[in-house]
Image: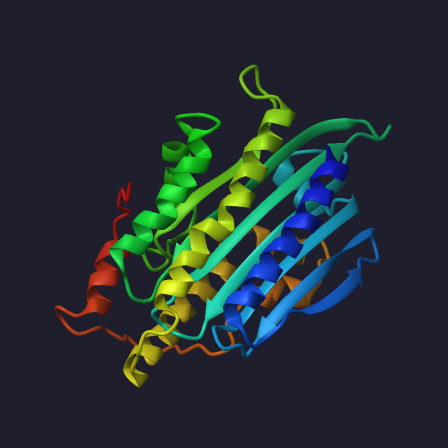
Length: 300
């Protein structure tokens, strides 16, 4: 399973980066192959200063070795040999009318002292973070997610949308990071779903990503915007940074397992503002976005 999924994310990385380069039309992804001292490595691809994408990364990794004590405690295990692989991406567009997007699809195995698999699971999801809210974009993103989920289990979309809303919640701000999408974790074999069926589901979601996001980018990338709207985008990016550094489990896992810092922190945008107690104007589009972020909404 781990070999099959790692092969899949290598191919998916190629597909996604090729399409994003086509959409950008100017910048290309810079590739960086890296190795982890304790075991494994990855292939980082970053795009910067493009016509559309100010900064973005589409990274894959496959790492293995002994879990550090902090992660053994987290997983409640005494023995801690592991293998983890996944594809993680974040795209920060230049135009504030184009939303930021994040996605991740991953697989994890845990072993005993004899090297036998004692636990295994999939996780992942994809979510949208706009700076200006176009309702039709939110509906489109969620509908593509729902269609992918419905092919495998009619309850998946509602369940994983709710988990996404709960996970990407900036508790210290009491607001959502964005408009959500779907988020799933610890997808293990059950009488209803074996690991091959979970693989089929996760790859279905991965294959849906470009259909989720690219039509939105194409529709919004050439819209006019003002300096004030760009300032708002950078202020909201600050909330994105806060979530990733304070709450995000993937970031914390990478930092605690001696992950590659450049790859882990590639999700951070290049230009961000933190203004003291900034409040949008009453009745503005900015205020409308904040209102939506205070209470998750059903988009489809």
